[in-house]
Length: 211
Image (cartoon, rainbow, N blue to C red; front, side, top):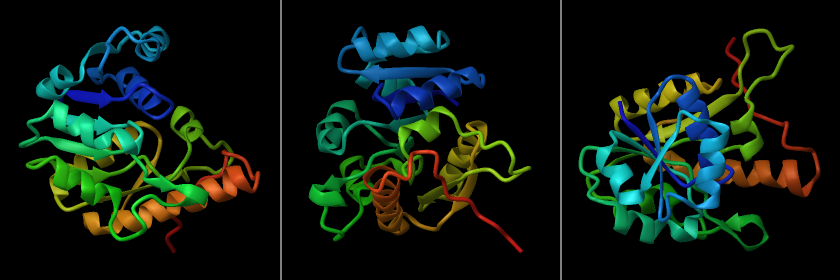
């Protein structure tokens, strides 16, 4: 499948770069393909290529959305149409004081679904900081891997995203439909509070244990 990653910041760049390093063809999309952030990502991961957002989306089967949540609406409007594409929501609506940016009335992922008609939206790659996307290895825990919680309404799209989670060193955990995304977004806020505000450090991850 052809992959586009929209956003070359702390989240988008390592997702794109590591997927490219794993053998996938990945296009980094942005308003300016020659921007410093995109050039920096390509310099670090030479397998990446760049294109304008709409061009990257048009060619892709799977699109990772990794832009600040406040930019989501305009990015989605400029990048469509979305029919038949898997859209991976890597964003988080964070409000003042580590509150939920949509007042917990709905998830950001559900807002994205409404703004990208025809797309199969999957929430993933949101419950940690960028450091864990850069390096997901945790030596000393045998085969236990960091959990990556995934939510979405279409099983085929979730299975595709789960394969990318595994490629990046995570254990995908299916949390159900897209309505579970609100819980994932609150889990992200908890991680930020513990790791950053309380100073526990970004090396903290969640894991699933089954008896």
